[in-house]
Every structure is written in C-alpha cells, then in structure tokens.
Image 1 (cartoon, rainbow, N blue to C red):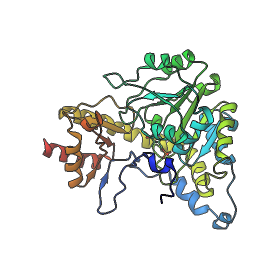
Image 2 (image 1 turned 45 degrees about the vertical axis):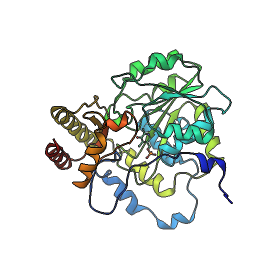
Image 3 (image 1 turned 90 degrees about the vertical axis):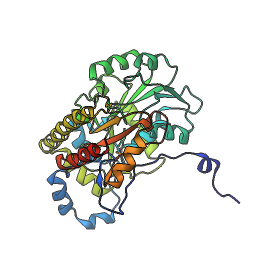
Image 4 (image 1 turned 60 degrees about the horizontal axis):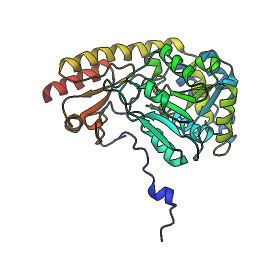
Length: 352
Ligand SMILES: *Cc1c(COP(=O)(O)O)cnc(C)c1O
C-alpha cells in the first residue's frame, strides 16, 4: 500500500546544490557570499535574550519590516517577510495565479524552482526560450497569454541582468498582468525595480538575505509591492505558517539591513573579483555571458560542463553542474575570495 498522495509520488522536487561535508571544499557551487555577515549580526546574536525564545515571534516581523522599508524607501505596508525568498516565491503562486487561469510565464532557462512551485500548486506554465545571447525575449513574453511573469534579474543560472528602464517599459506594457521580479542577486547589479512597485500596482519585487547579506544560514527573504499584493501574500502565509520568520532571524536581519556601509564594501569586493574572474575565464577560451551577479556561467564546448565539474571536485573545488540539455555545456561558478578564485583558475589552467 502506498500511503503517499499522487502529488507526493509524482512531483519532481527542486534539487539544491550539494552541501558536502566529507572534506574541506572551496565551495563555489551555491552562490553563497565568501565574506562573513556584518559585525552587527554577531552583536545582535550576542545580545539576543534566549529567554525570549519561549514566545512565538512577531507573526509579521514588524520591526524587521520597518527596517527593510527604510532601506528600500517604502513603507512597512509594502513589505512582506518569509522564510527565505524561496518561501515568498512559493506563496506568490497561489496568491496571484489560479489552476484554471492563464498561468505563469517565465524563461525556459531561469531559476528552476519556479517550475516546481507551479507544479506543486497546479498552475499552468508558459515558457519562452531565452535568446541566443542568453537575454530575456521580452517581446515574445509580452505577447504570451498569461496571468503574470517571473523574471529573475539578474537571471540564474546565466547571471545576465536587464536595466531598470527596460524593465519599467516591460511592466508598463503589461498593466493587467503581475510581474514578479526575483532580485536575489540584484545588489551585485544595482538596477533594482523595488521602487517601481510604488508606481506600478502590478510589480512585486522579491529579495533575499542569503546572497549579498551573507545570511543564507538564517533563511529570510522579503517582497516589496503595493499593499494589495502584500495583503495577498499575507493571506497565503496565514493559511500555511503564521510565523515563518523566527525571532533570531528577525533580530539578525534587522541588524544586518542597517549596515549599508559594510555591505556596500563586501559587494564591491565580490563585483571586482567577478570582473577579474570573467576576464580570466574568457582568456582561457570559456564562453561567459556578461554577469551582473555573484556567479559566472561558463562553458567550453558541447557537454563540457560535467567534465569540468568532476575534475574540479577531485581537486577540492565545488561548482554547480546540471546534466540537462544546454545546461550540460556549462558550469556555474560562484565568485569567491581572491585566494579561492586563484585556486579555481590554477586548477582550470591545469585542465586545459
Ligand atoms: C538563491 C536564490 C533564491 C532563494 O534564496 P533564499 O535563500 O530562499 O532566500 C531565489 N531566487 C534565486 C534566483 C536564487 O538564486
């Protein structure tokens, strides 16, 4: 007797990057930040009163939302917080799409979790291929009959970014559809559409503390949008988990979001290494689309990704590889510290 539901038996879940602990790796496979979080995070943890854990946390993360709102230049009613931006994205599917509706449109090569969420919530999907240069085909997407869009900007796993002006034109051209921007890597690009949410009621911007804030271990993400969209997310949250952001996460993220100077510096260091690494990889004959994120999508010849991935792993460097059409030509390499990147380049030199 199989006690699992048809959904549990049939669905193909998202595959997260490896978190191996069998040896010490230089971990360039899940786009974590190579630098530690702000010193204010340590202070907030030290100051945290463990006695407080007796109580449930604030269900809507009020103080954190206030701090985020200040940083984003919006009001707290425009902010929704979740247990990682993955959760915020998950809740957005039932909040804005119907199983018997026109569905969600996104690129064929983008964050693969969108497809999983759509399948989980039974939402129809309309996929539009990226153009040959890995940019979004916004013209084609605009013409797709659908309820709304998911646009990762910069895109994953390609790293390609689109400027705010072009995105605003897109948003204005589809006023009756929701446009959900996944800005997990936006701090490495600096073209956020968050403020568009104040002018355009069809814009929702999703961000995370996992990448530029060096807080992947804490699990917190948020959305910026008009009050009606935020209210929709809150309704879905309260059908699922009333307290998605725990008290420690709320305290830590509130401390982190205020330290703009520290994060500007850490982000600049990552960006400068990205530029160096991208040039070095191209110099070695890799095809690398122009990255605006904290990772590089690098390929050299048909189905060459697997070979590079395995050789690097043997040498103690983890990168991300997907054994799927198109993707198998590439590996995705997270930008590390200068020393980590040097090891990576040395190993790649030895491979060639
Ligand atoms: C990392 C990532 C996220 C998820 O981040 P969380 O850790 O769940 O906040 C969302 N979207 C993209 C494109 C990502 O790469």
